[in-house]
Amino acid sequence: MLADLGHPERHFHAIHVGGTNGKGSTCAFLATELAARGLRVGVYTSPHLVSARERIVVAGSPIAGDALAEWTRRLQPAIERVGASFFEAVTAIAFADFAARGVDVAVVEVGLGGRLDATNVITPLVSVVTKVAREHTDYLGSDLAGIAREKAGIAKPGVPFVTGESDPLLRAVLVETARRLGAQPVRVVEPRAAGRGPLGLRGPHQWHNAWLAVAALQALPPPLGRVVGDDVPPSFASAFLPGRFDVRGRWIFDVAHNPDGMGVLVAALAEARPPRPLHGLVGIRGDKEWQPMLSALLPAVDRCVVTMPPSVPEGQHWRLAEVRDWAAARREHGRLEVEPDFDRALERAPRGARTTLVTGSFHTVGDAMARLPGFAPFG
Image 1 (spheres, rainbow, N blue to C red):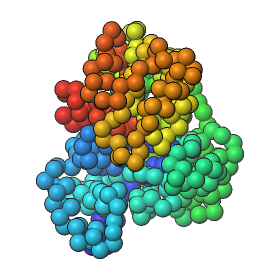
Image 2: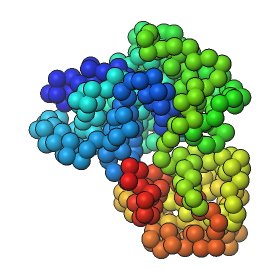
Image 3: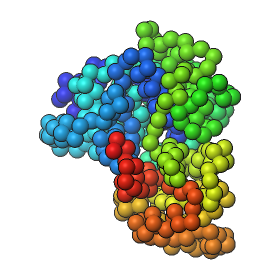
């Protein structure tokens, strides 16, 4: 498909960001600082919350609906010829749009895994892997070392490779794989205390993402790369990412969609101490490890309404009857309510609450934002 378009991915510099959690936040920090340096920055992320246009952003503006339709029309013969997936087609459109809108550098988030991801056609200036946790086991397997090897598959010969993985065994797999693929230099970002400058993204976990972004910026070649200094750059204070501990009045939106993500959300709640009572509206895809996710969240909220987001594909529906039985067995049925209808759940969750948390998946956050006036990304 890219060949049909004249290889637009060769018309801009890129930074490639993979990992299980923290990809979007790291991309947001990188894009904010690069824009602050006067560069025209493209950002490609996934999945979207409300509109597919959110995935392809240049200088803060999403791709126009007409442009998305026109690129789709132009690529349709190639899409049908090769049997391209939705993600493969959108990735090609993103690179074409970045070239057409004249970006200087694109921050490209891996969709799934790394080695075989559609985004891995680029040769970036630096490759980043945030951290590794168990996810997409139907595609990546359940072995964490195997998942790490897949994610390190974005490493390229002669390209700097940066990782923030803290587990020694997984870190060793990432480093060994990156070196075997010829990446150089390979840098591991150790956990650090919070810096003196503020961050626009909330939660204690964001400091690790921020330091990882700093290391990636330092790894860029001249003239893009320069030493940031002992603290995070001032631009990080304005970084923003919809749906990541996204506080909007009495609502908090967070896409925590696996046990690791739910753990950092609970830590962020403990630090932020939002007004109580705190109620949760939770929808989790059926292919996720929902039991440890709910076990982590329930002690942190006063009441929880679980539901089924309508945008979840039918084959990935959450079996709410199993959730009800699980809650009863744990004697949580008084604090956990099951409401299969999403719209009714969205009405029930805020009743009696001073703060309402919406979490569990991109589907849950996106479906809620689409129904709450003024909350959808980019309006």
